[in-house]
Length: 447
Image 1: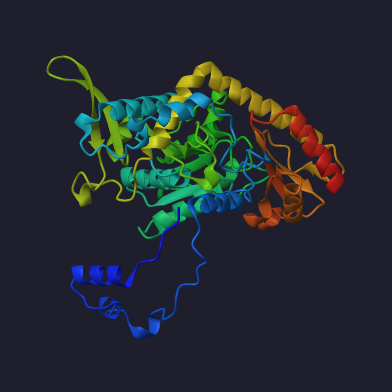
Image 2 (image 1 turned 90 degrees about the vertical axis):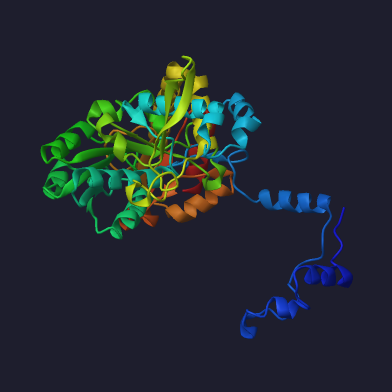
């Protein structure tokens, strides 16, 4: 079917209905010099079938993970997602829900959110988690603001081995509140403890550490946490891929006061960059500072179990000056997706995924660095991401791999000029041995 243009009679009827005589009168408040005084440059109208065909052709130009083999991570990860996840979260009760402004009548959504919070708290080893925020970057920024408010201090120490975009967002959040962000340089892929000590002082509200860090390398979280505690500062652990916690010590056990990160890896598709969800978990003493909302379990007067919004620290619910954050929301569907995914995998499933990620990443790193054009950037232990140096141009190599339907590693020169000859590669449980061997063969031919 096609849609015919509006007739003159229809246009006049619409103008009359809103009380104006002409289109010019309707737009009288718009200065003449900025009006478009010609027809829009649009192609002829298409039928519904033609539009679908055209959009399919446009979508076919994307290098998506259904048709390409992905070795790109850097904060968003191509994990296997059980088919049951999509089936469950597409139920209308979840799919159409947003913020429970009338929570008592949305018991199902509240319970699902409560389960999500419980799972995130368990995964991170913290006392409680909120009902999610936008993404990993804003979660870190919110955690930094929380630390400053709780301690009354005005400085946050962040290593440059933390995700560059997380750091950028944190700078943006804190800059206009008179708070300082001090960055710590990395060395050989990790953050030197001596550099942390040199920057932590009585003004430091929090020390941030990412585990594994942006380069995929393992940081000494416990040692960094001890430096922060000695100065009276809080410890914020950022996690880009929470599935690494299937094997790694959780932030709570490593001395963290706040754990933040990106929940995309928990059953959410890559989706070309979003929407994702940020998680934020804290120790009990910080509960009154946590941004967003917390769902709690209770009983009604008849003793029946029920769920409520225990804390609502957003300005829509309380006085603005009392709100801990005026720019956060919950990513309800994404958070429920994470809860469904974790429920399906269970404790052993998460551990199995993490184990496969580690083993496959080390297999590819050994095979890749056996090629003459590639070598390890440093010797730091890594999880499922690693950095290699290459004699080829990383940007050009990335483009040439696309011709072989391979999404290659991230050219690090985009964020770290001193690493212009390096690429960050990622391997998850999604990758097969055949795919990794094919990548190595293609790289050998291209270099």
